[in-house]
Amino acid sequence: MVPRQDAILNLSRLLSHAPGLDPEVVGDGMLAPTAAQLEADGLRLHGPLSWHVVVRSTGGTDDFLAEGEVSGTAVMECRRCLSDAFVEVKASFIYPMVYRPAQEANLLLLEAPLRDGELEEALDQDDVLAFGAPEADFGPLLRQVFAIDLPLTGLCRPDCRGLSVDGVDLNQHPDHVAPNAEGGPASPFEVLKDLDVDSRS
Image (tube, rainbow, N blue to C red):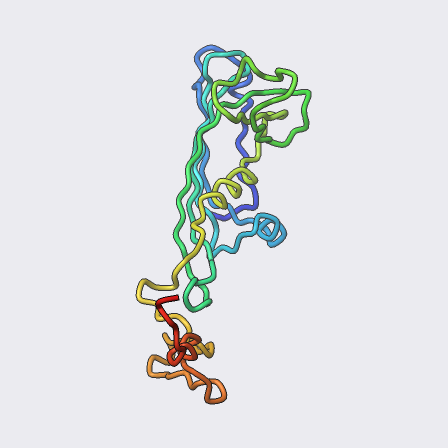
């Protein structure tokens, strides 16, 4: 499957409301965001993202349900040694979805609460997806969902030894012993060892 920079689903079949048509549209593929998109989302990736999205009619005139998942490998800074850590992430979503042809064509995630009662009749969850053209690009949403599910930190490997106090990677130099800086104490608390503290005061 050839990676693409978008994740477009053509929902015109659902919008036609023709009897006998399949009430859902299914799409999947490989999403390869541009460098600018990754920077905007604060992401580094090792390869493209795999995605799967289903949009189905809920029986209303222009009301639908969108659900899907996205997975891939994020590149993060190892919390112990600061080298690259490759972190597997799999995220999913489910949103009510409404067609509003008057709005801009892009797929938008409208976060509740909405002002002036807009779309109140369509909301039974906190957020709703709105689209203004039959071809809806789920790419921005997939990147956002993936970014939200990233862990706070990553590890390059479970037994990462980290850095020594003088900044040497102990994974590459396991026998390294950090010298005391200018003959100073090995521990910042060592200077307190001869401190005379009167416990009665």
